[in-house]
Image (cartoon, rainbow, N blue to C red; front, side, top):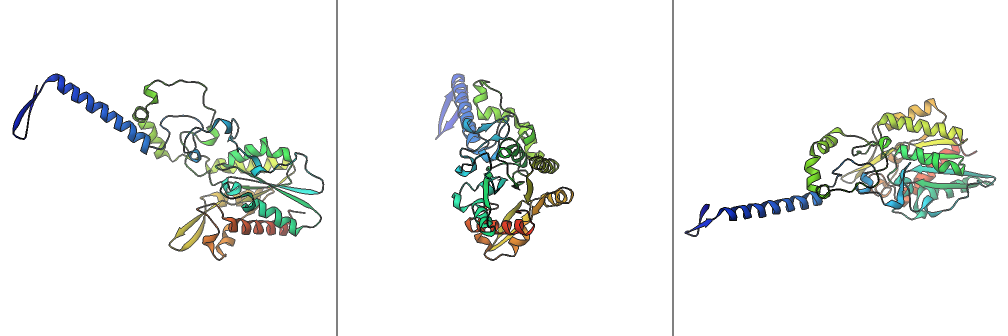
Amino acid sequence: MFYFKFKGKRYCIKTGGILLLATVGLICGLLLGEVGVRMFVKIPLEKEYLRFGVFQYERIPERLIDKDVFWKRDCEFRGKIYSKEKPEDSIRVACLGDSCTEAPDLSVEQTYTYFLERKINSLLEGKKIEVMNCGVGGYSSLQALRYLKKEISLYHPDIVIAWVGIHDSTSAWFYEDKEQRMPPAGGDKSILEKSSLFLFLKNYQELSNNINSCLLRVSLMDSEKNCREIVAALREYNAYPVFIIPFSVGRKSNAVFYSYLGGYCGLLKELASTSQCTIIDLVPWLRSQDNLSELFLDVCHPSEKGNRMIANYIAENLLKLGILE
């Protein structure tokens, strides 16, 4: 029995009452813990394939899952249809990349691929230029390589512009891109395994180790390997490779600054010195421009104005280097 005083009066709680209060308290605590984990812990709580930050670590929708590239787009090439047989007397340019190329938050007419096609056609007379938007939001260099081999090569591009690397350097969860597999089918969970609190407590040590390991989706060494394989594949397809060095955009007070992503600038410059390919470095040129704050929507995605200027710069460089001949 348990005795206590309240406002001068003495009360007694029997053993059964104590057990009841303890049970209610435990249940309330577990419920609060479950709600808390579901609300505030936004990371996968169990080791499972195909969990990516670009999908907020939720399951990829069934219609988008692809065993090779992990996910595909609902609408390929931003809705534009191309024949697999390239038209005669035409130059086909395929632009590989992530959301910087795809630009899902902009209209088709605001993408750099749209402006690039218009610009090149205005610079070259007597030739038809097709520029394909092959960007897929969230893609790494490994996905771009596999997408090139599996799909883009079927369209016989003459030039491939690869703007990849931004997602290579983002954090992975349990598995690097090269280790990703399709999740096993079925696997019904027990009642406990449906509890976020239970999974959090059960896998806490592994979750903690994953956070502290700073695992990247694609290591710098693997990024170099992927880029070299892109060059090798394009040589086999008789297409010319062009790489854009990935960079990020920062803002401090009213100033805007551009910086390279760690290691990728040196990686691509080394690749260009040892392989037959071209790199385009946008950073020095961007630093020389006025109204920098109008050129990007955030840390990496160009605005309509930024896309137009970037397309013009790329087109002029391709022409100056004789790549469009």
